[in-house]
Amino acid sequence: MTESRLLKKDLFGEVWRVNTGTDAQILRDTRSARWWLRWLARALLRREAAGLRALEGIEGVPALLRCDAGQLARSYIAGEPMHVARPSSSAYFRSAMRLLRRVHRAGVVHNDLAKEPNLLVRDDGSAAFIDFQLAGYSHRRGRLFRIAAREDIRHLLKHKRSYCPDELTIRELSILARPSSLARVWMGLFKPIYLFVTRRILGWSDREGAGDRGRQP
Image (cartoon, rainbow, N blue to C red; front, side, top):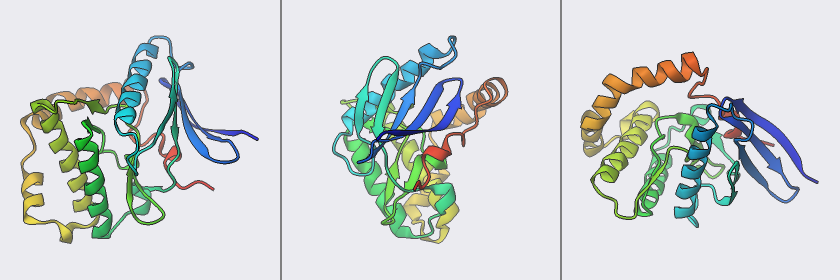
């Protein structure tokens, strides 16, 4: 017996948790997106699919189950989002950093680890990453890739500073103190525009959708 539960609905479509009786999956459906945003919703769908394909077989990221023009299904990962679990163990952040290195070696940058709901604390205390809509893939891993990868690392270290500050190393503190030039430009020029458009115009909050990332029965 298949059961579905709506987790999120916004201008970009819907996110469902689907239980098939033997397992669970997360279904992202862009068919209900507003007509003027449907092209963007489907572009993000393709971007997520490309990232997940490149990460196939890596424990701690969702497996891509299927993707077509309007829908993407990925495996469900049980755990609590970071802002709920509030991990204070350095072991969790070591796990997260190991996972991030594997993601980068596969040619993928997440590009959205600043959002705490995108990092899970699994039942065994290890880390998992979800929501790869903004991920980038490059088999060459050129200069822009390396800059984006460093920003992934810096965002992870910002979370470590919030929850486990005494465990930061000198090198990690140095990375935190030196954001890339692109990050500075983003924060100074583009982020205020992004926040205005997403929150004021689209009514879309960064923490929306956290319901599909928390612990479920």
